[in-house]
Image (cartoon, rainbow, N blue to C red; front, side, top):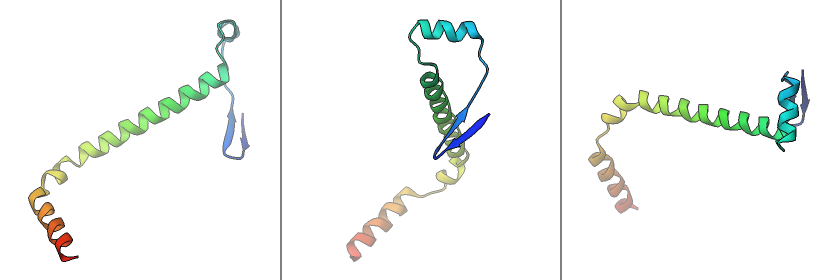
Length: 80
């Protein structure tokens, strides 16, 4: 079941009753824990995805002549 509320959606899942009872007994706020866990996992995977994209750019980045870039920037600054 998914219910859309502005920028949020309600996501439901089935969890064994004993696990939820133990979590509550231990003071774990289940919805807060699940929300934070999902946000953390999404952030981790986005970072992983970005790293893979950067690794794929290694060949392109190696072709850039840093000295030439620096020289162009200096020339541009001096021209202003």
